[in-house]
Image (cartoon, rainbow, N blue to C red; front, side, top):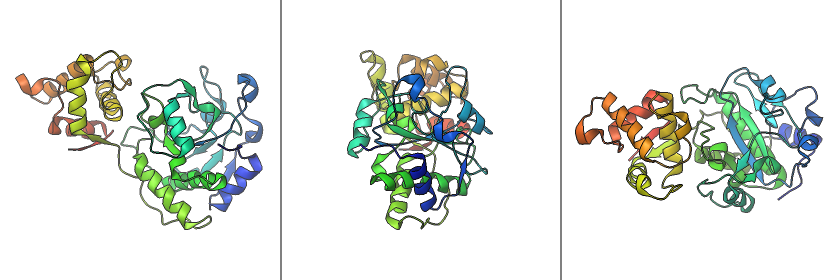
Length: 306
């Protein structure tokens, strides 16, 4: 736990890491402290998001009718660079899993996010990366590198390791952002922290798409439908699979994102299998390697490991 960086210290930390920083007018006093009646901090980590759109810097600053801005502390454009958006409490994290927050605080491996009862806006810095988040919108090398530097700069300023970095999808059930692998991202932050401030590592591509473990997903599909309400076997893989089924129109969004591969998801997956030409027992809603790989390829949301 730590005291949040002041605007001046934040700028100094980011610039020392090698980042060019742009400042949105008014960002130093732009926050939700007064409106929420809650001040920002103590802080325990940083949260990585994708915006789900393009040209959304002003949206992140102003917010939406249902969610007032700022929606992050910093916005990272595809080509527009890093922009400071808010300083203080911002509406980026929403409710998060308390076990995940505790793991970030203690810099331990993150548990599965199976609930959302703690306010992540109280204690997490947030970065929104301009990207459609559909698995097909590539992150430019320079943009991804800046995201690594942003996370490393804040971790360095607080004396944190890469274990203080999480993706939104790791903190709140139903979220799938960012659309790259967070273990790979943390590994890059670790390398940057070891290299030292002002020594950016060579620009590299963004890490690969999230991976879905076929064997774990099959277990979930066989176990979850008959289990008690709320049972979760494999949240990350189930959420990605459901998001793909939603995108293709086989599953209603209202049934997706709870981490449980329930009977409705099984039925939706069976429709996908039939679309691919499977019949009988081969279209029973239990994922197979070929059908799952095709689903990941069609939507661009994930790759499959056996």
